[in-house]
Image 1 (cartoon, one colour):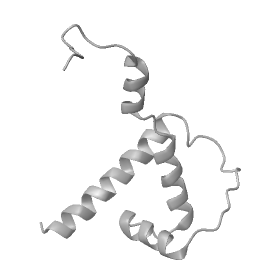
Image 2: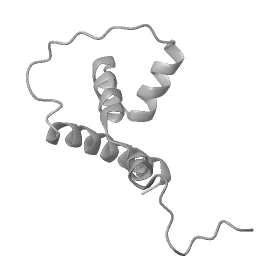
Image 3: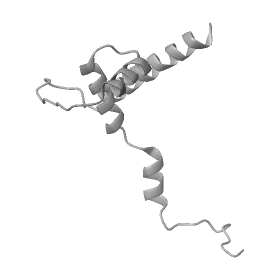
Image 4: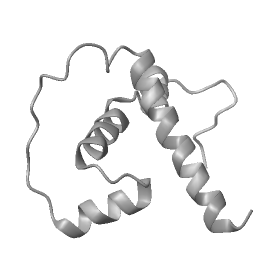
Length: 93
């Protein structure tokens, strides 16, 4: 498998995983009644479609929202551990 096919497969797998996460979180349940409309630079839209392999602008929007709706594990870790250093940390230089 050449690098291009491998990267394309990895992108498709990531896209499917993100949509599945959103589905499992209940974010895709129900009717599609919310209307989202905005203007974007054509080059940005085309680059995003090329990167994701999507051809539908609606599917691209769903994927973008699914990515933004994902909890950030790093941010959660920072919030959880803010101000807490372990006993082995020495701040003296």
